[in-house]
Amino acid sequence: MAPFVKNLPTYVKDTNHALRIFDSFNFDESDARPRFLFTMDIKSLYTVIPNNGGLEALTYYLQPWPKGMGQRPPFSSKHN
Image 1 (cartoon, helix red, strand yellow):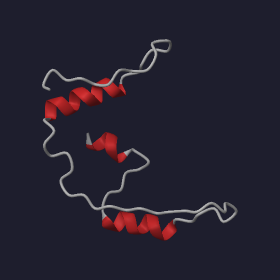
Image 2 (cartoon, rainbow, N blue to C red; image 1 turned 90 degrees about the vertical axis):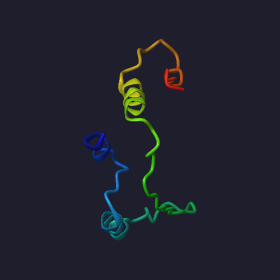
Image 3 (cartoon, rainbow, N blue to C red; image 1 turned 90 degrees about the horizontal axis):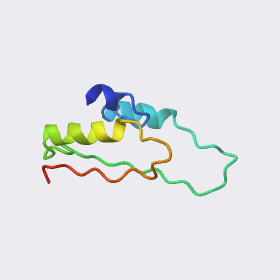
């Protein structure tokens, strides 16, 4: 999963990476709407998800969903 996650636009590697992002971040000054910046610190997220079940869910959601089939139903694992 690491190669996939590292290519997400929301990926933050570590504290130093987050600090570099925050240091270079600028809000659009022409936009007068209120702005909020949130951060969180999570350690060992998703450690209880079985590897096979996680891979099944990823496979399910990363496969293209045919047009005209309506909304994709939620993933349901036989392990639940």
